[in-house]
Image (cartoon, rainbow over all chains, first blue to last red; front, side):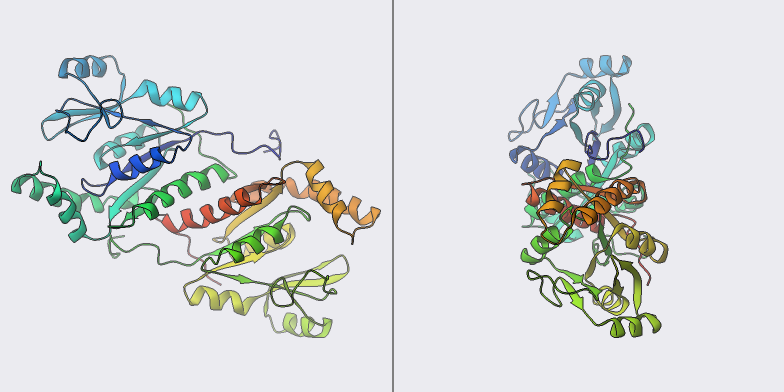
Length: 206
Length: 206
C-alpha cells in the first residue's frame, strides 16, 4: 500500500465466473448485463453442439466443429473443457487473457464442474453461483425448454440438487427468482463493483 | 451449509462502518443513502459539541450534554468514544444491537481512530474508507467550511495524510470524487449488497 497512490484505486481487472445448475437463468442474466452496456468482456464458451434457434454464434457461444475444438484442446488453448450431454464445451484461454490485459473484467458462464476447474487454475477469480428461487421454479424453467425430454429433465434436476451442495466452494450466491431478473443482475453488478472497491484486490494470474 | 436451505439466502444483518478523514464527505454520502430510503438503520454518534446550523439533532448526531455522555460512558453504553477537538464523541451500543437484532444492517459513521476501535470489538463488521478524489479536493472542501481556522485546517490536512496510511486496515475504499456523490453512494450500496450475497457471510457479535 505504501507504494500505491492513496487517491488511485480501481485499476484492477477481474475474472468473474458465473455458474449454477442448468435452468437457473445464467444466459438471461448475462444477456441483460450485456444490454446494460457495462464495461466488461464476456468470453463466450466454445461449443460443438448445434446452435438453438434463439442463439447467436459468437454472442451466446462460439459454435465450432469437433475438429476445431480438439485442435484447440491439444494446443492448450482451453481454460477448461467438458463433455456435456455428448458435446464438447470449453472456455478459450486467449480472450480471457486479452480482456484482463486490456484492463477489462472478463466474465465467463460455465457449469458448476467447469467453475471447479477454473477455481483450481485461478483461485483468485470471483465465483458467483446463480440459483433459482426454489426447486419448483427450476423444474418449471427446464420444462419450458422444448429441447428437454423427460429423461434429460430428470437428469438435470438430479444434477441441480448435487450442484447446490457445492455452493460453499463459491464466493457469492445470487438468487434469480422468477420475475426478478433485474434484482439478480443488480446483485451480480454490485458484486463486481464491490470487488473493485476492495482494499486488497484479488490478483488473477492466468 | 448442509443445515441451510439452499434456496434461502440473505438473512443476515451487518454492521457497516463508514470512515475516512474529515472533509471526505461522510455526511453527504450518508444523507444521500438515507434519502434513497434503503432498509438500513443509521446509528447516529453522540456528540457534546454545539450543533451546526445545518445539522439536525437525532439525524446527523445526538447532541447531548457532557454529563449525559459521561454517564453513558460509565455504564458501558458506548461502543467507542473519543475526544475530538476538545469535545466528546461516541457510538451508542444499544441502537446498534437493536438494529442487528431486528434484521437490519446498522450503519455507523466514525473517524478513522473510531473505526480502529470498532474493528477490535467487531472485526467482522464491514469497514469502508471514504476518500476524496485528491488532496486538493480535500483541502478545498475543508476550506469551504466556515468553522475552520487556518490552524484547524492545517491540523486536519496533516491528520488526513496520516489516516490515508491506515487504508490497509479497511475492507473497502470508496472515492467520493467532487461532483460524483452518486457514484460514491452507489459503491457503498453495492458493497453492502455484495456482502449480503456472500456464501460465507460475516457474523457480527456485539
